[in-house]
Structures are given as structure tokens and as C-alpha cells.
Image: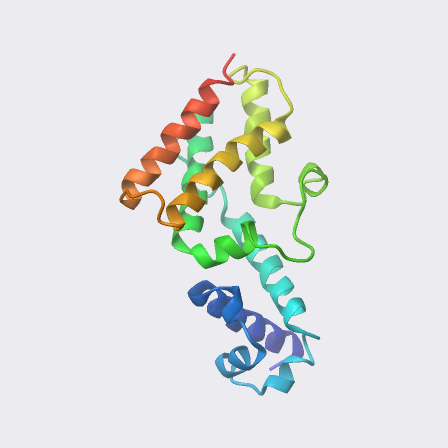
Length: 193
């Protein structure tokens, strides 16, 4: 096995622990055990736990970007936008520990609004911005700052997800998904031209 393959195996083991139990459960000893190596061997690839978690975050964000927008409810603008909502809810509700780690936990080198977002260095979010820009070009949405409109739209949905994951919203997942769609439609209806 090459050095690169070993590093990937270590990061994959860390990601699996994070997805199942959360970032606090990721320890070098636990990762080493899951990867089938000694804890000291990890340090040849990652100088510390933070570096390992940064690698997990970057790989996870790239994977999300690759699959984000992969489905649509139709060929029209509405279908594409709500397909992105479906993708987001699949991610947030399907892997809540990973969602929390990537989207809400404080961590070094996390992407920051507005600089990283304006530069396009937030791949899943960038697809939403492009959708908002398209809606404005098509005259579906009135002209505004696409980045800030995308932030307002996603922040609202993320807030609902936080409440749902914290068990503050007592609904089935299906009903919750419907609530998120209704809320997004209300927001978008307020932006229509």
C-alpha cells in the first residue's frame, strides 16, 4: 500500500467515526484501530488530530460538491432549485454528525462568509448562488445580491434543520421536509418580481 493510500485509509476511518459518533469521538487511537495501524503511524501522514479533521472536512466537502445538484424535480428552474433542497436535506438528515461538523461547529480553516463564498470556494453553496443568479436572469426573482439572497435562503433552512436535529420540531421526517419546502417557497415568493 502506498503512502497516499494509507493516508486515504486513515482519513476514511476518521470520517466513518465522525459520521457515526461525531467529531468529539475522533481520536488518533480510535482512528488507528479502525484503520488497522498503530496510533503512531497516523503521525507520518497527519501531524495532529486537527490536520486529520481538516482532511476529512475537505474530502467531505469535495464529495458533497460532486453529488450536490445530482437530482432535480424537473428541467425548469423550480425543479432544479428544489432538487438542491432535497440534496441538502438528504445530507443534513442522513448524516447529522457530518452536517454539524461541516456546517455549524467552530473549526480552523472553515469557509467564512462572504470572502470564501464570493470567490466560489464553497462548492455546494456556489450551486445555490448560481441558481439564484439564473432565477434573476430569467426574471423569476427580482435583482438583488445573489450571494446574500442565497445566504438568507440557506440560513433559514439550516435553522430549521438545527431545530429538527435538536428535537425542537416534533414532526416525521417527511412532514419536516414538507415544512422546509413550504418555508423556502415563502422566502422565494417574497423575492419574486
